[in-house]
Image (tube, rainbow, N blue to C red; front, side, top):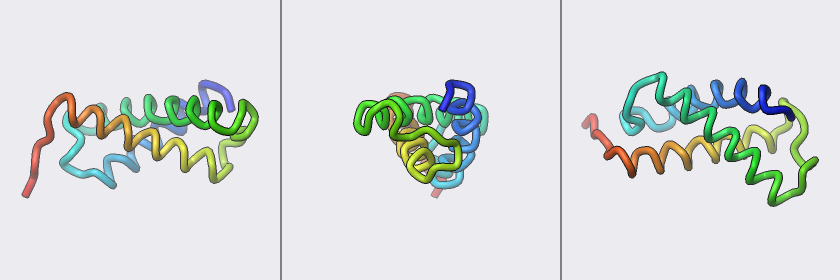
Amino acid sequence: MGFISWIILGLIVGAIVKAVMPGKVTGGWITSLVLGIVGAIVGGWISGLVFGGNAISGFFHLGTWIFAIIGGLVVAGIWGAITGRKSHA
């Protein structure tokens, strides 16, 4: 999968991360989308290291989505730890 595909997937993952972690991702929707892009790229990089360069090659491959979402959640968690989390209780 190319770099542009990971960016498109990252936008989708950003929306998923915002839905899964509402109120915990500071900065609103734009920040969530950017974190999703970074997370998807990080997830793709990690999956390439773990499973080899060609292990995840398709946009609609389940492993691609799993690693992108995990990467998005990790990056959002790190972002929350750096910036401080706001609780909406």
